[in-house]
Amino acid sequence: MTKSIHTSLITLGLVTATATMPVMAATAQEAEPVAEQKLVEVRLVDTIDEDRGYCLDIAGGKGANAPLDKGMQAHTCYDYTGGLLEDQSFDEALLKAGQFKIVYFDICMTASAVETDASIELASCDNSLDTQQFSLEENGNLVMKSKPELCVTVNATEKREGRGAKPVHVMRPLSLQACSEDNAKYQTWSLFSF
Image (cartoon, rainbow, N blue to C red; front, side, top):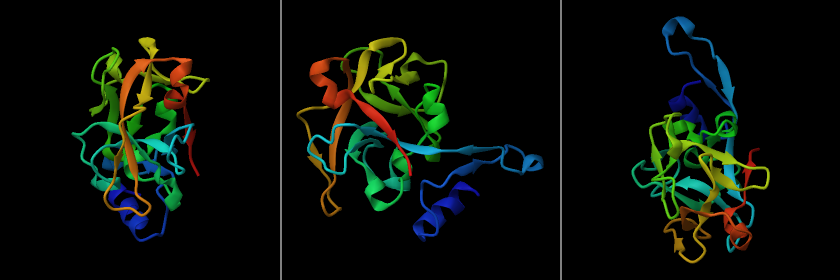
């Protein structure tokens, strides 16, 4: 099933965004599906102040309409709608290998630098870049592979409210910060899928 057909079926409510999407072969001669992708949300374990939880999300838009130039944020998880949205859906197999790829957009989570206070952004996927190599550790810390003392961290004090949903969605900035027990509620992540 092509991405546009899959998105149309989601819109019509005929399938959920969590349905596995086959990866189509690159050439017309290889028209059969070659692999299945399991999509997952990356969710903060502590809900902090949002009962629906916070998930890694593309900033500035919703689902298939999300812009790719505003980076990443922690945002109300959309699984409460009964499915995963395009801007919060990561390929589980790639994620476990260290690449946090948002399949729908064919783009990867990247740090602006491998240092404290670096922002979490988006860029074309490139496995050779240290800024795109993350690891979700057994303790839930989401760390840089090249500097595992740095955790992807939800901002503890800065919070914005969205404009359209009821109840309102909430967003918080993300950055790399030193992993610490004091910040565990802002640094401990898990995977969710249906």
